[in-house]
Figure 1: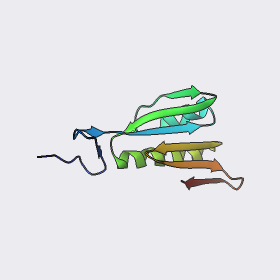
Figure 2: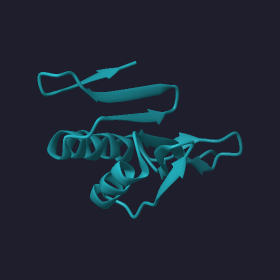
Figure 3: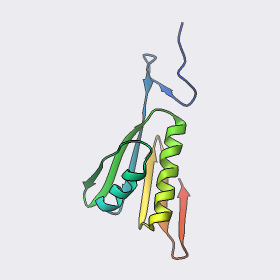
Figure 4: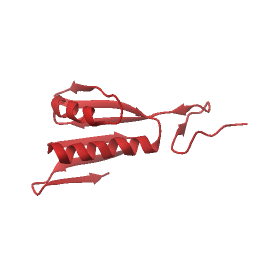
Length: 106
């Protein structure tokens, strides 16, 4: 008998729970550090090719949503240049549009 993971979790072919890779990218490591401080989990910002990057593993869809919400709030409150959250085959992009802030989902 197979045991299903809690709602929002993914399951690998052996029946174990797999976390969703979440990558947060920003214009600089300094901006990534500001977001990392505001995430609901301990996170480390790194520099990669001049950009700021935070790599996380979300244990559920809700945790992924919590990460996206934390980035959204940080982006707006800190008036960052831009930020992108990639997860599964999706991404959310936050960028200044001259009239405040904006975001889009792809």
